[in-house]
Image 1 (tube, rainbow, N blue to C red):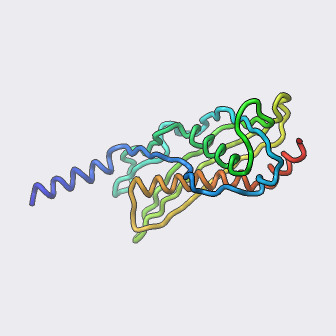
Image 2 (cartoon, rainbow, N blue to C red):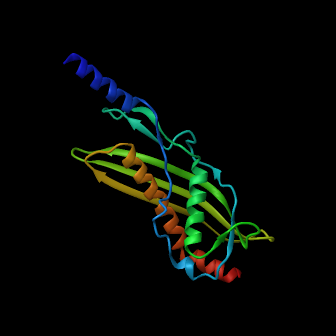
Image 3 (cartoon, rainbow, N blue to C red):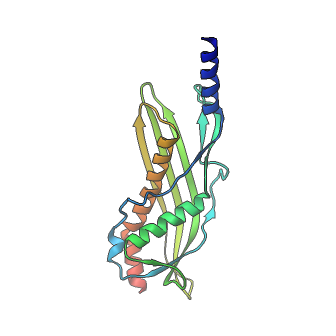
Length: 195
């Protein structure tokens, strides 16, 4: 009996005190089609995004039963790559191309990519939030067409959950970010006027 109890303690400590590495990505089966599909087809050049997060080492914290930070929650890939890939997917689903030379250049930074856990009396609330600042410029002229901060947040309340749930929450947050881009009526209007 002592061996089983000791093994259980070791397993729990390993789960709480070891870093978790999440494989976050926008899911390929998510439909991002929105008003941006009404824009005449364009080619977008998405430049490498910069990482402007306050904590570049992790995307969240694991916490023990007392709520004390015990280990990091990390991304298996750079968050700037994840955001750029999700934006590319959203633009392609709306009938646009990605590549050089582009009609429109997208530059910017990831300002937040964070996962949070709030424990309640009966349920646990998992929240993911992804934010980026994007600047759209006309290729060749560097004339600004539009700029905006975009955010995607997703919350899931459940009885509990591990890394699979955490990944699901961050995937959905990334997808909400892309949804906000392709449904941005001001972006659509600015791109139409710049043609």
